[in-house]
Length: 248
Image 1 (cartoon, rainbow, N blue to C red):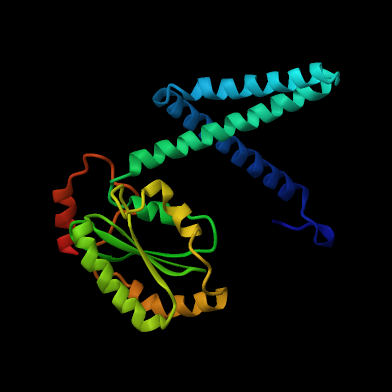
Image 2: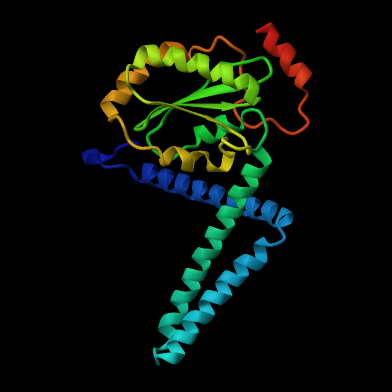
């Protein structure tokens, strides 16, 4: 930001910053509106649930004001605001559920979830992979090292075991966990991956995480195929993808 006299931002710089904030806010509103329109077309329950939350909570606050003799001018606006908040929460959760449902079972879906983890996680996607787009991703966090596989459970068994052995040589007695993404018994559904990670016990501190990340950095140099950075669209041509992998 350009500075004026005394090191203070100039009027032009302030105006430019204000315009940038307004533009960013406008873009966020447009994105939110587009997401709402898309979800509304696909999810017939979205509007009834949002409207029901808004009306229901407002009516509850109105009833409270009438029962206890409290001025409704005070309580009803609070009910409206709370109802709007709950409606937005419903919208956000249903959008999230829809996104997970579309991504589930597609190559790269777990990598996409890991890239959007909330918290101080160190993620290395595709540390091991096959030409069939099976992949093992590595996460370093307070629990230790977590290996997450997506793809064929049969092929992943050997892939995870190999990566686990390589990792154990470098991190000593630090705990290593491993999960396979899926909906069968013993697997972790995609939508529950972050919850499962946060439930793991804290075993190491940030200093140990830095040390482990440095030791494992060499293992992050992928020698296998390049993987999609997000869920592959349904109907993607796998033969063409595999030819590209072999050329690499």
